[in-house]
Image 1 (cartoon, one colour):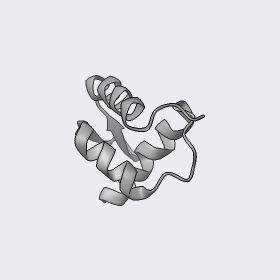
Image 2 (image 1 turned 180 degrees about the horizontal axis):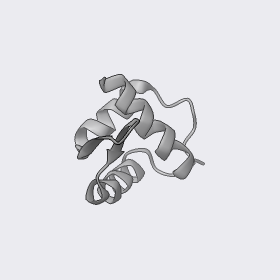
Image 3 (image 1 turned 120 degrees about the horizontal axis):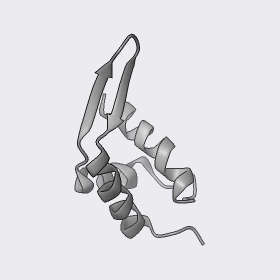
Length: 71
């Protein structure tokens, strides 16, 4: 489950931050663990994992600090 959540976060934030696809899963895992976002599991016909709104901004800020913009 952790791998799936990490992939969902990576899929959303990698293009947003223009990060290279070569960042390791370990780097992402460490960054997300340190940011400790609040996640919600929604099931309204189809299951969905969503990052809480307050966590979204702090996670984005932390990822920018951790990885910096792509050169």
